[in-house]
Length: 140
Image 1: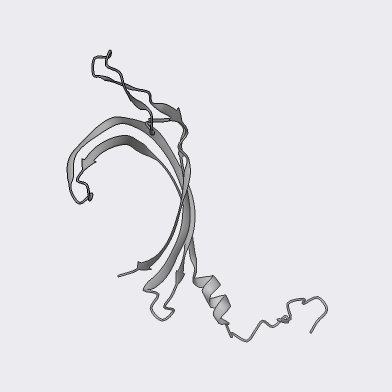
Image 2 (image 1 turned 90 degrees about the vertical axis):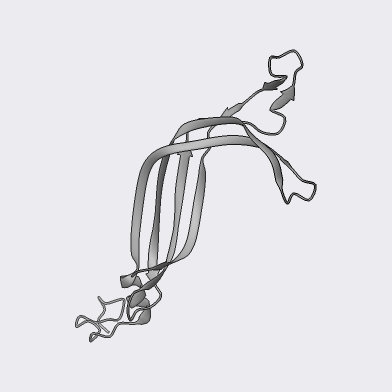
């Protein structure tokens, strides 16, 4: 092995032989994406039967729309090298909502003196989260 060849492949290459690991690295496809959208937040109250098998009534107590920024990355790894029709899909997406208004437990209170008999006190905060996914993709 030449002194200036730490990998041991020599200057003449590796005679065209490709290991499974090298093939997988060459066949994996990566992607990145970014976007802007609309996020819809809502709080609902529902009345169900005792065993929760049937919903009797439901109402939306509060809702809000916010601007959503998203960006992510991932890759596909072919599972079938013969036809490349099936691959494993792995990735993550970061979703950023700078400001959203919503209700949590205790934010709706009874008030017999108000017009509707209740007081609603919404909270406001950022609503950022990461969604990861692992799946199988099929190409037809």
